[in-house]
Image 1 (cartoon, helix red, strand yellow):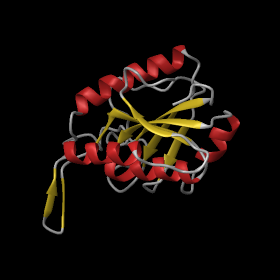
Image 2 (cartoon, helix red, strand yellow):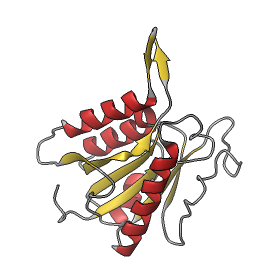
Image 3 (cartoon, helix red, strand yellow):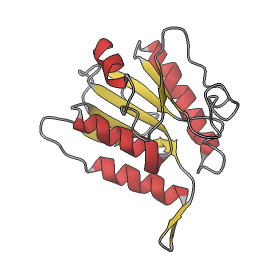
Length: 180
């Protein structure tokens, strides 16, 4: 991945009502807190995304960001209602204003809002780095097939590690080594 494209750290749905039951949630939160500190020190914008739905109404306890995740004045906050953080929000406009061309993606849930947002960013022309150890999800079952949260995280990492679009860069990096 190149350091020449202006980046933003995207923190998706790390909310009190989302994290219970998620794989390695405490480890993910610790690494995201470190990434936020590194981003701020490097003057890399941090963009916060929060999901609102039944049971997670704006301002409610489940809607709140996890402990230790505190936006500072001037950091954009995006309220969303769909898995895609770009859908019916001003995220694209916020990133344009910040002159961002690359997103460093963290958050929850790997198989829903993280993957959908990262893919949507790719379609919109952004370079995308998925932070392999800074996103999480719960176990899941569909059609009689059970997957652990750990397996889902690994699959999302594998998917983005192999993603290719013309003229764009994609990748996966650990929190300790991702360029900000």
